Length: 146
Image (cartoon, rainbow, N blue to C red; front, side, top):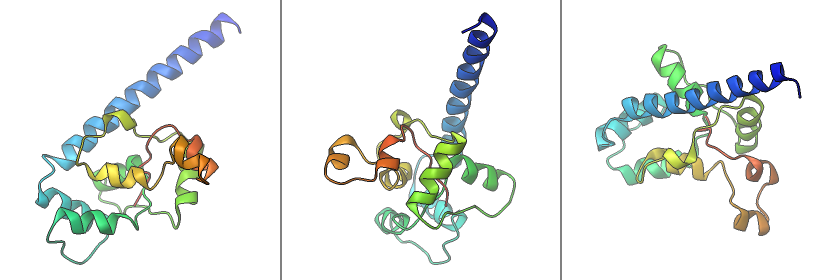
């Protein structure tokens, strides 16, 4: 590999790392302290019209959501509708093709991202028991879009 290509790869990796840090910060600003009101705002922003009286009810409803977190945050910040995917497979493919992952290790306990991530990725143990190969290959989080 030429010196020019090595430098280009280093710059690309640095830009990717900066983007991962930025999306974590953007999510934390959006989600606040993770109180019920924050969860309820998330549900409204995802297009749910009903009221959710608890975080548990929000978590249950999130099982039906296929959204990329990068796209979600961009849509909210720009006052646009949140783009949703019809299936986990479509979301996984889009996330992988566009490299729009959320760093899994940065997801805090109790975060709605945990529920959304759980619907996107399959760990090795699950893969061994018939998990989807495409989602098993994905190494980060796409919240993955609503």
